[in-house]
Image (cartoon, rainbow, N blue to C red; front, side, top):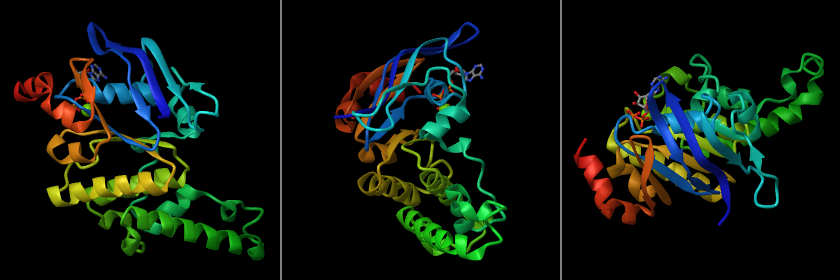
Amino acid sequence: MSTILETVNLVKRFGGLVAVNNVSIKVRRNRLTLLIGPNGAGKTTLVNVCTGVLKPDGGRVLFSPHGDEGKVLDITGWPSHKIYRTGFVRTFQIPQPFLALTVLENVLVALGGRGENPLVAPVRRLWVRDEEERVRKAFEILKRVGLDRYWDYEAYRLGAGQLKMLEVARALATGAKLIALDEPIGGTDPAYASEIFRYIRGLLKVMDVTFLVIEHRIDIALPYADYVYVMDRGRVIAEGSPDVVAKDPRVIQVYIGE
Ligand SMILES: Nc1ncnc2c1ncn2[C@@H]1O[C@H](COP(=O)(O)OP(=O)(O)OP(=O)(O)O)[C@@H](O)[C@H]1O
Ligand SMILES: [Mg+2]
């Protein structure tokens, strides 16, 4: 199985606190990897260090966006905008959805295109074909995240979960290969929360994309994961398939101890 992201002995300190303590994980390509653990375990810090939001104090972050034949990028300490351009996106790094724009317009902006070029814009025939193709692509993406029927809604009319899915749609539109989501189902009801995970699973099948998801509500998230890392106090304390991790006494202990 191919690895898209690997951390090697990653360390992040805040003063005397070691928020990420020698963490080595592997994220498999086209899979959903789940990162769980109690409050303050270091989950968000780990993802922030990987995506360049924070600089690590030790260790390495290796990203392989183009499969096993492509080259491995050592992205350790890179600024976040540079990591973003390689195809590793943390959703909040994408500029927030424009709330006054429609759902479709938000995805079109993320897709980019020639119509925005002031030299090309006045010559209609140069961009009209382009524009049709972009709209087709945008609808395809919106369908995959369950937002196609809301295409003409202004983004502000969406619920919290739908906004998260719009962020995923925009990440896909930028060509993201690895998408990190920090608590994507926060603020949504259990029924829609499960639906979000079903959409994510659907994307894995049809698009060349990989998800690294931090989630608190493991009762909902666990069944959808391919592989799980459990963090506690900066360290990975367990890993494996969802059923293995769910039965692990150390995992049960940190969750009961919470
Ligand atoms: N910018 C910061 N400055 C100082 N300490 C921080 C900073 N960010 C996080 N921490 C500390 O690092 C530790 C790990 O925090 P982190 O936010 O990564 O945990 P988490 O697993 O994401 O928790 P939660 O489930 O509550 O989101 C915590 O003790 C937190 O207080
Ligand atoms: Mg967090």
